[in-house]
Length: 104
Image (cartoon, rainbow, N blue to C red; front, side, top):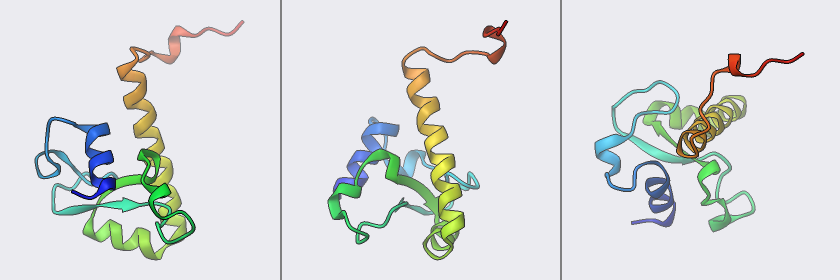
């Protein structure tokens, strides 16, 4: 198993395989997909790019678009970071309703 695949699986679902769990981050498709490096490994970092905030699961169609269209790739990055933050908040028991915070 490649290092980036292992990192991705350990963060999202350590007890399951990719084939059992992952949907495209962009369209929620269950069709075959791949782990995408948002910042390409060859762009000055090689294995340093194998960190969870740089890894996202995309269907083949959206993976190809992300590789070719920088603005789309940045939108994927933003969506991925939101999902990571939500997971970390949930794990820490920090899920809250915005109405819980009143500003006076």
